[in-house]
Length: 307
Image 1: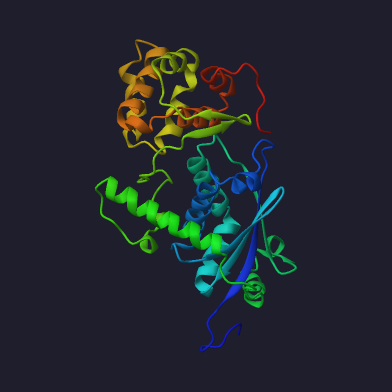
Image 2 (image 1 turned 90 degrees about the vertical axis):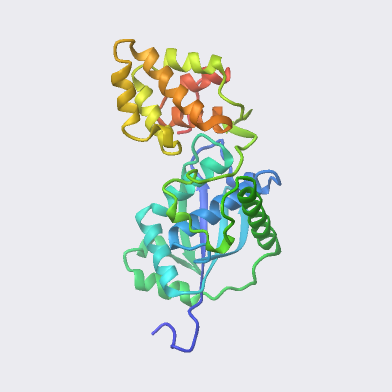
């Protein structure tokens, strides 16, 4: 047995994170006082997704070791650690963190590579043997208390959650009881204001509202891919949920592709209000390979994708 009934199950592991996009350097983002809370929030929510609870796993410290961001994790229950390992093995944690980072940083895409270590053991090579992974993590006891910076970021996130809840007249919940997995997508139910800036092709842009000029250019150039872009937007926009996009296609079939695309984006703009930002549209375009259209909307005249 790894632990007797009287001994609490405690283990530690290190999660190594690296962006595969040359223009996105996670340690640099975390070292930025402006971006740090956003990166921390994404980490917190993704880890909550993996265990089913905001308290399923503790972050003790986040180390910046270029090009890696290294998160020291502490597990206090074997069942939470098991859930985390399953989520990690199935790729769910990776997808969740990519999604939360994309939203909290207002970036187009944040492709990630992950590695999990406990002491000198590389757990990625033994993920199918869950019990062995648990033993390795259990053997590695946390060598430190939670870093003061993590405590400060936790408090900041709590107060932000509380503040936003009050501002939006929704029931104020205890931060610890918030369960991210109940949200189908990180932006569902998110009451955080849109980020002020976002990164595209290594450059920083103001995250403004979509303008009439953007709207017309989108409708003119998106062509047949308007439905795919709509499906990317629908992940975080209730007004575009099925069967809305197909209905728009039928309703404006005679008017052609321009009008179909125009009406779809109009529905997004009208339903999302201030949250109908250019960053969200650019993210949807990049997700569907429409880099040149994204560059057109941002006034760029070169093409260099993250590959």
